[in-house]
Image 1 (tube, helix red, strand yellow):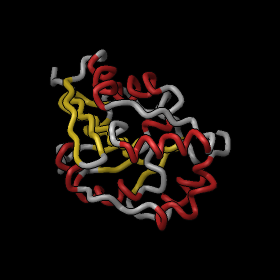
Image 2 (cartoon, helix red, strand yellow):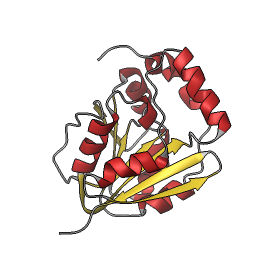
Image 3 (cartoon, helix red, strand yellow):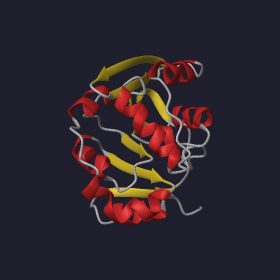
Image 4 (cartoon, one colour):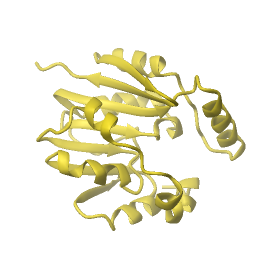
Length: 189
């Protein structure tokens, strides 16, 4: 895997980026639950660690080895080096999958959504949390990320929901302040 902006940011990430209130995310993800949770693009594991007591097992997947090295310092997290476009997990192997503030960084967003959806078990949920590109300050951040030569592509919540619906997901979009959550539920067979 290539060295990225995230590898450079890893030593400072937990100190620079504030820990979000996990109440809304946990509620939308349907936590607590007894199954496994994947934090895709989970970086240093700061979100996953906050949810660890609400699920049976937590796995963090990220392509940045430097971020995962920081996550290794946090107890109870299983770590996997992987890109979201090709996750090394069996189909239908996670009760919950989350991706927090990482979707806009993915190179192939439709392929990533398809693979994230593939690993959600029947009756499970996928929650994608992103900055809401409709908000002016988020558009400024998007512009700055392009200036920094990041591969960021911000999408509206409804656009992400539409891509997931093409895979059979029952979707809904929630907004609060500058954040949008796309919740996708997989029917039980």
